[in-house]
Length: 220
Length: 335
Image 1 (cartoon, one colour):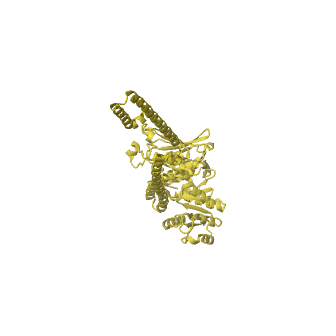
Image 2 (spheres, helix red, strand yellow; image 1 turned 90 degrees about the horizontal axis):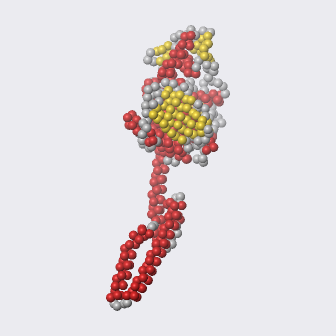
Image 3 (cartoon, rainbow over the protein chains, first blue to last red; image 1 turned 45 degrees about the horizontal axis):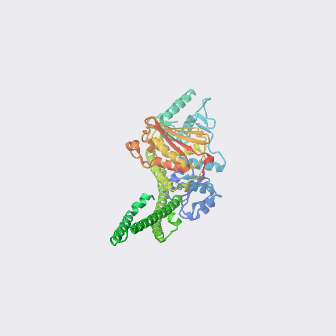
């Protein structure tokens, strides 16, 4: 399990962020004494530090330079000007996220920095669920010894359903997931894509593998 | 100064002098002076008087023209009194008074500027402070059930949009200090803007299409992203049936043009020239409510500072298209 250290002076954000990241299966450490942040980072050796620049005790940027050797850093700040961003990146932070952050974006950035620094591809290329096998890089679905090529939209929909196999996924959630992958569709387009996906599954002899839960969403 | 102005200014004096002259002539005639001598005296005196007035007019006019020329050539006209040297006592006293008046004006102006600067700094400070609770609220939302979450996130996004506008409004007061021109992918700017308004767009059932955004532009990413955000908010606010927003890039010689097109309710022709005016809301804004008339005004100001050409076409009932023409790399003046 990867460890993330949160250096943030606002207690509510600290608490909620901890909760959020723990839900995403990270181990979370928080700092409440801001005088000795570099020492604490040195001791804990986290895989990533989320650093708020507006700390009470020390200037965030100097802190950033002080811990850059020990751990990768994502700077989180409410300062939004390009100059601030430039300064943060110059002081050795790996990425820069402005408050109020878009949570999926923050999680994606965290994932990207962790992957970059651990040097391995954490995302599996092949997903398996409910008798289906999906190759993400090729966009090919196989089941019952047959294969089918999926479009980008279908691939995203199915991969999300497969990673949440057994759970009910609402249409709104699916739309949001697609938007996060630069597919900006509306409700109708989702229906069209869903129908196509189901037709392909049916041709492969897997009808009804995606169940519709009335008023709630879809379930694999 | 014209001769007519000069004469009308001195009319009283001239009449008085002439009256005195003729009274003297009458007196001399009464006391038995020969008419020939009086006529001679009269002519001599009148000539002298005329010459005096003409030369006076000439000198005054020359001096005034000189002063006006100095004023015309000055960049900072309030420095006038520093650039003229008095020719006589009267001018010295007059310029002294002007200088005092100018000084008092400068004090008032610089006081107002300082107050405005403080106010702007306070607004910026406030915006940064308000973002912490907004972030906290967003995180809290993340851990509540999905229906409430979606609604709350919508409201928070609205708050965030208002706050952003306030920040950019404060920044436009002194824009050159806040932006950095860098090489940026058009697609990255568009993505950022769309992501920032995701919940608003999804909630309004809008489909966004992107075309040919693989262009490089030289601009400030954050500012343009803010501008696109305003356009997206407008498109979401004034959408029609089956709303679609299309973001498309196009290369025009050395320039790159980005078009943001929607199929919304559009703007009537007579309101179109005023959409970038400060506080202009138009009929759509009034009908729908909640319009501040600030979004497009800020866009225009930021676009001007970044040397982006901002234009809007619209047909009522069919939709609106806003184009941003980015400056070519070689044309970037020293901003």
